Image (cartoon, rainbow, N blue to C red; front, side, top):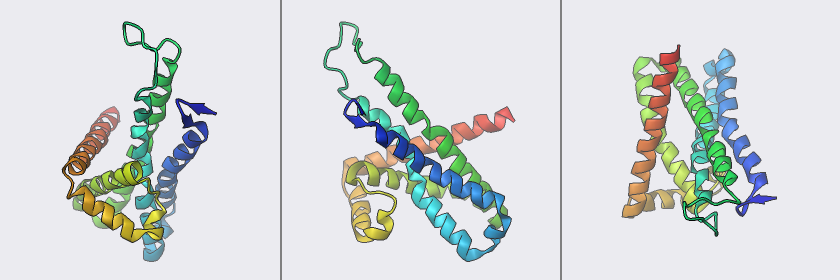
Length: 193
């Protein structure tokens, strides 16, 4: 089954991948003994870092709306496919709680281990790395596990991102947008408390 040439199985797969960093950080947060073991903490943290871009990748799913309708009416409404807009919007929106939870929870763990200054610096450092991960998935179609399988290809891609102007612009826009999403969500989440 497909929606606008997009296989439905990928919806479930991408949501599963988006929950992996949430489960990893939840596991770390609820098992203090694991946080004290440096090797186990490092392994779980690296897994979390490799999987974190999968949360934000869901934001990009709305791209499947490009040219989704061949028959627009005079008001630019696709009468026999309007529901597709809400489908991909909702699909992309799942990225908000997974991205925020995974990053904010790990930020709290980092603050417990290394203090308040680390808490401030951690999202500032991780969000640009997440942007690079988004670009890996979007342009080169790399997966999280390609960090282990194709590390040299990944390094080559990163070099391109900072040498080709439109890719550098994309990186900057992705990074700024992820900062905006994270810090605005954080502001409203803390306001609610």
